[in-house]
Each structure stands twice: as structure tokens, then as C-alpha cells.
Image 1 (tube, rainbow, N blue to C red):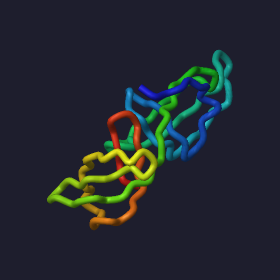
Image 2 (image 1 turned 180 degrees about the horizontal axis):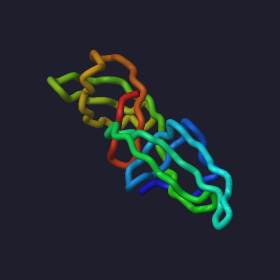
Image 3 (image 1 turned 90 degrees about the horizontal axis):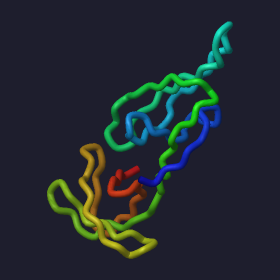
Length: 124
């Protein structure tokens, strides 16, 4: 899996983090001051990039955590067929099949932007 390790204190709102082995985008990040017997804690509220589920995480700020490497790519719609579409990556000219989200209307020859991590893809 394409990911790297970083400390919790280096996370920011809008960046990505792995929670429950799922890539998530951080919606809220807050820290609590260190207490009498412990270190400062960070609370992360995030939403799954590919599944849309909300997840949260509470860790010490000096703990290590995995951050996914998600690529933003451009593609051109080649054909549309019911719920699926063929997209040609404009960088590698590779053709991939993607499911069409319910809230998006696409037509052939339209340029789209999508996120990719390993075998998972999502239209932005």
C-alpha cells in the first residue's frame, strides 16, 4: 500500500490519514494540553475518501501514524455505459473502468479529475 509514516502533530485539516486501514481526509484536528500524568493528545475527525464514512482517532501527538499517498490525476471519458464509464488517463494513456457516482453527469470526450490510491479511484 502506498503510504508513509509521520507523527500525529504534523497532521493538518484537509490532509489525509489512515484510520482503520482506510484512507481518510481530515475534517477537524484539535489538541488537548498535557495533563499531570500524560502527554498532549490530538483528536482527529475524518471522512473516508472512497467510502464516505466518518471516523475519529485520538492519539498522543508524538505517536507515529500512517499517511496514504493519494494521487490526483486527470482523465478523459472515452465511453459511458449505464453505471460504468471508460476513462483514459491523460498522463499514461491507460484506459480504466470507473463507476459513475449518482450525483455526477458525464459524457464522452469530457475531461475529469480523479483521486487514485492503488486500485481505488474516485471522481473529484
